[in-house]
Length: 204
Picture 1 (tube, rainbow, N blue to C red):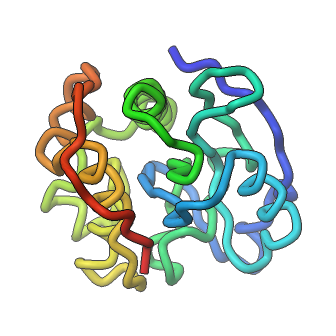
Picture 2: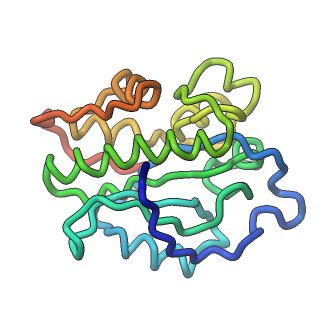
């Protein structure tokens, strides 16, 4: 079980204002931040000042202060969020996890943080009573409800966004889309010993 460090900066109920999010909240969203220069603390502090533009519930990455991979909770779960574009993708969000790519500088750091990322997504799915299945075709009809979905899946299937994360970031460190799906389903986080040569890819 992932130990989640609470560092809440988003006001509770923000996504529920005006009926923007609607229970039950049964989808879990997988992201990366797309910023190769950010840290866990940078992302936390930026969100504290900009949550009216977009927000998510968790950050995962490497914390140099503790020398560990960590999961930080920055908004309450089970309330929706603003992380997948339009209301269609956001309304049923139980939790949304951003992998802080800029916090990673070695394969060992990535491996440790990826294990936390996978387990946290699975843990949130259990809390939301969602299936631990990544991006199944069935999720198209439900706008992700009942499943774990990537931002890429939401963009490709009309949820109101154009981002493709976290696929390029994970691939940069040696984790394919198929491997990510297998790890979500089985809980055994893949740990590559070396990553393929690749340049950082920003989320667009």
